[in-house]
Amino acid sequence: GSNRPVEKVSWEDAQVFLSQLNAIEQTAGRLPAGWKYVLPTEAQWEYACRAGTTTAYSWGNDINSSRANYNYGNDAKQTVNVGNYAANPWGFYDLHGNVREWVHDWQANYFSGAQTDPEGPASGSTRVRRGGSWYVGGWYLRSAERSNNSPSGRSYDTGFRVGFQAVKPDGANPE
Image (cartoon, rainbow, N blue to C red):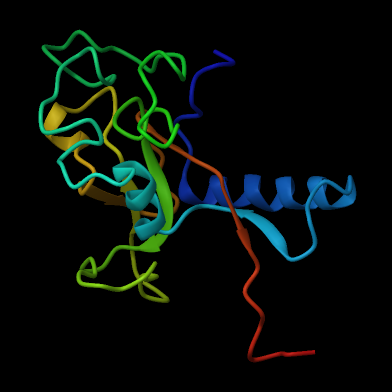
């Protein structure tokens, strides 16, 4: 449906979409100079999901079917419309459940400590997905939960979320 998240897309599919979106929006004059649409980094995704909280979920430590679309007793059979559940404290919908979401990073040990928006390694064999889905149990919807798949892999419960960020200057080619 038109109000449901995209699903069954690979990380590579998401990159094609973002490339085309950036080209269309730049040509139309709607993309500010120095900005682009991207997949969020893993750290950005978790920061948005937590929305200033330190609990397992953005609403606390409990999980039930009134808070997110996930496989609770095999009742959830598919995605639901975005906005069917309450937004997190920062206004983001469905970071917990509905579909797992591709992020920018390659799979590696997740950084901890007082780092600000760390990016993952420059290469790897699998890309990270965050957020749980309609297909998995409530434990997998936690803000810190991670999964991964091949960049070309497609899954019935995986989609993506578009981010917007300033383009980092190219230090190798400053011209």
